[in-house]
Image (cartoon, rainbow, N blue to C red):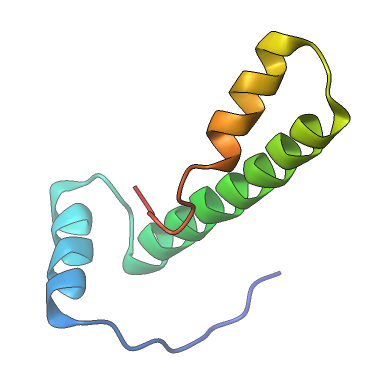
Length: 78
């Protein structure tokens, strides 16, 4: 199931989205937005997992990896 929503985006982002659709990299504007939101959700989950690993004081190699990932910004949609 899906729901239709309306969002306002700056002109430069709309041009970017339209360029992806025009080039065939995406099938629609909605597909671009959905892909970006899925990436953001995965990044949020990965950051939460990294925080859990950091608190668990597991294997030293995983601790440093978890610490690194937990410190990454999670607002970048690339």
